[in-house]
Amino acid sequence: MTSSEVKQFKNFLSTSFGEGVLFRELRLSAEELEYLKNKYPQASLQKTLTREYPDGKVWYEVKLY
Image 1: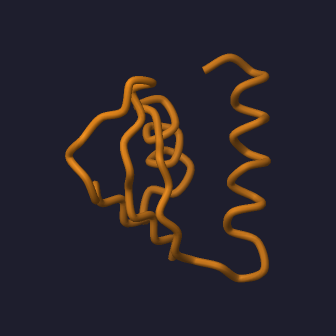
Image 2: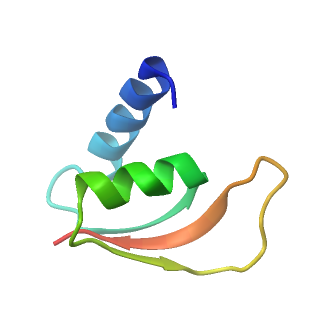
């Protein structure tokens, strides 16, 4: 991801997990998934659907601890 995309994704995560929210279903690209794994190594990231969308994104259950 470019630095602009990283900044945009950080803002997206901040909004998604604001106010104490620890669980979300998110559609993520491979780069976004890797970013989450590195940023939150103890997070649970489980694929919910096996279907990949034309943009390459896949749905995941994301649980932050």
